[in-house]
Image 1 (cartoon, rainbow, N blue to C red):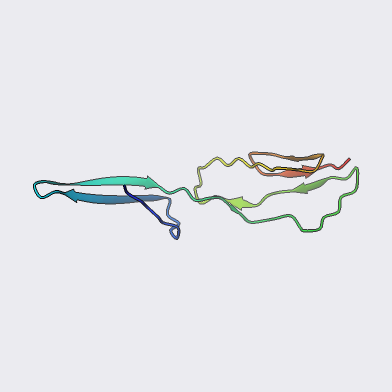
Image 2: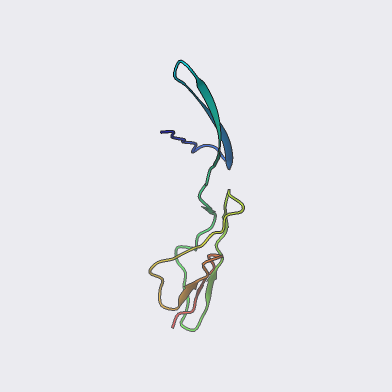
Length: 97
């Protein structure tokens, strides 16, 4: 078993090699690893927001992903009635009724 822990690195691709020998022969193998880092959320809504019935509250999620080519999908659970989230962008809109 090979275990690879690299929590501190911001590198996305890594190349490692391992060498094995048993006294008669030996071999070296090279492996390319893709390190997937989680996205980073850079913004959050203010703690106390007031929206009147009939008003609209919008929130644009500021985020970045160290893995630039990853497709992100956002989900939210237990949203208030009238609130929607756009899964590809994380954009929230609430129209309280």
